[in-house]
Image (cartoon, rainbow, N blue to C red; front, side):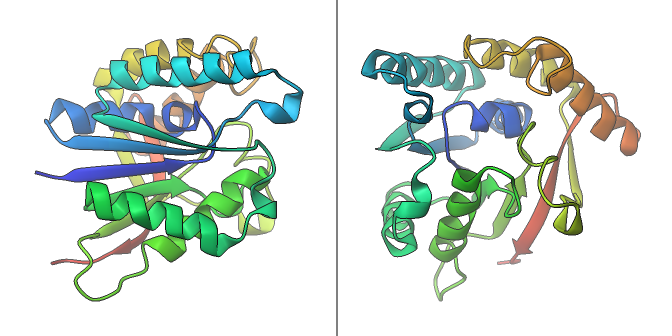
Length: 221
């Protein structure tokens, strides 16, 4: 049975980036674990109650998607660049040793959001292909209103597409749990914007709805 780890910077990134793919993994009775590095609220001047609320929303979204376990590291929002990469990567390595994933997903490396970039760098260190590693795939996802706003010189260029047509509604239901993060259309993080994004990637490869990824590394064991 496959064991999947999703490493993301903030609560909601897991759903926006790959909520449909998570739902497909869990439909196949595969174990999905989610690690959230930052609380995602303090940069906005939010109080502790807002941080707790967002964590509760993440738990509800992940429960709906069928996630087996979720862990929060509670680093301050938009301050991951002040944390040594060695510290972040060690925290991720500890989770990898506990959950023993075969597949690891995280953010695209050239995202406009600096927390996303730091999480990619730390995850890349944690999943380096050392002897006896169980990780056979390392994959990055896009995050709407962050990835597409990054440098066009190093833009997201997917080479892996996953058909989420059967679970598109579940992705939207999970996203709806993050009440303060759902923006009005035409924002990319509106329900219609998220739907349009999935439709765009799906139509790119002859599907109705899809999520797109970049396969960084695959090792056939």
